[in-house]
Length: 324
Image 1 (cartoon, one colour):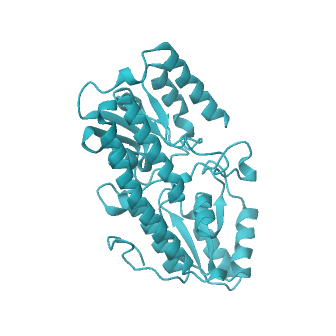
Image 2 (spheres, one colour):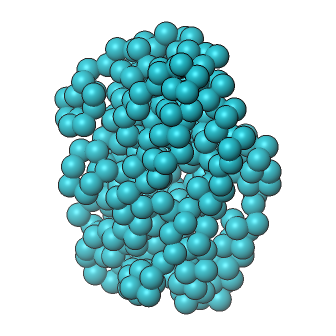
């Protein structure tokens, strides 16, 4: 367990011991207010709680959670929430103080990644001592988050436990279909072409789950910086493995990826931008890509088509709008 998780855990434990029991703090009225840090978490809560809650998401479309610093209004929004869910594993690094602050004032605060076995989690060498937080890139892993939300809401609001359990089961069934689609789409890419080059290392769980080699220009956190040596190393890889496509991300600057394209071109190797992937944030609210299902459908479909595989242009559900 990393120091960030331990710190939050200790703060929440102190609140639990000092205040009334968790179950007794249930909603005073419906719909109750749920605060969340990122869209992928908000989407889980919306699916599980349904009309029992209104969900407010802090870090929205195209925003990098690694670097996001909460505003005064964000903290007020969390304080006005009845219960709060965050992703965890240091993803919301600069929000740690805000989460601890609201927890120590009696708000129930939970990480949706808390049920994950450490054997499942990745710990890259350059991120020694900390786990890779991008768990949602493996659909099977993110399904554990659905279970956390259902279990937590059931304990907090026991009279609606059966509803939360049923909603979670229904949503996980949809995620199972999504997982099967992603695996099938990626499997159509010729094996020699299964190399996913992106702006930062957000896709390692995706690569492990669906059998892709993943290369990120920056590290796990976008707070790290890519140097000329990193760019040259990846350019050499593009040329050596005859990789034809690289990908930009919706929440990270395109500068480094475009530098790769130019670097490869200088060596006589032509690479195109295969599309824009959703890494640390989903698409625009109110769109299909603005849901977790749509986000992963978009990513899998975009990657498969750009790297020589076969996937329907409008994706699993025929709802995608921006795939080449």
